[in-house]
Each structure stands twice: as structure tokens, then as C-alpha cells.
Image: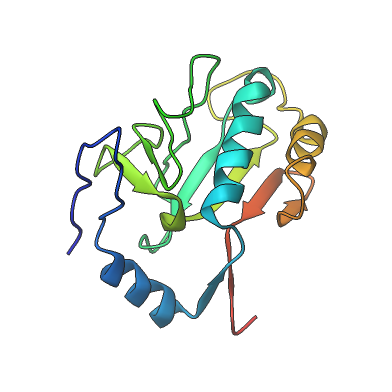
Length: 155
């Protein structure tokens, strides 16, 4: 069962049932690539380069498949207003709404052709911007740029 985040902006303590998330990671045999500091740096880069991003899809580790969630980033996204040292607030679409710990994010995908939009998304530009974060697992194909926050131990 999931527990909602407490709404404490100045003293954020991630409480989306860490035991549940630990169990999901263990049962799926996942190993995380990114720590919280790397996520904060990554989000700073995404906000700085928001004009490159037309769509960023998100899959959470406790979902069996991608359900259409997207990451909401724009020029008004701010550190310690929308995202914090361990979590983000109201930046991922879908239910439950509200807080998401970075460790809940399995992957981010930037599709070359965003749904319902004309034109291509500049995947090379996004990849170059994200490379400035340093040592993050990016996979570029003809159709998408994917950032894998986890890998499977079995892989």
C-alpha cells in the first residue's frame, strides 16, 4: 500500500513507504543508477534547457507498464519550490498526484516525435545537455532518448 507524502516544503522527509519501494526494487531485481544529488542536478539541466523538451515520458518502478505519465518542466520550474533534495511535487502527471521520490522513477524517455505535436524533438540537443550532468545512463535510438534510472541485476 502506498502512503502519501507529507506536505512539508521546508523540512521535506520522503515518506512514500520506503519499505514498499525497497520491496519493489528487491522483487524486480533492480539496481539504481542515480542518487538524489544526481537527480537534482539532472532536473536543473532539464529546467535550464526546457525549450528543447517537448515531451518527457516517465515510468515509475511500481507500475507494471508505462501508463502515459509525463514530466512537467518549464521555465518557471524551481528548485525548492517544485523539486527538492529527495523528491518532486506535482511534476509527474497521473495518480496518485503530488509527491514522488526520485527513487520511484524507473526511466525517462524523450520521444523523437512527441504525441499530438508537430515536428521532431531535438534528441541530440537533449542528450548533449544531459551529458553535462555526467555519468548518467542514456540510450539513443532512432525513435527515443532514454535515461534508465535502474537496471535489472539479471541483465
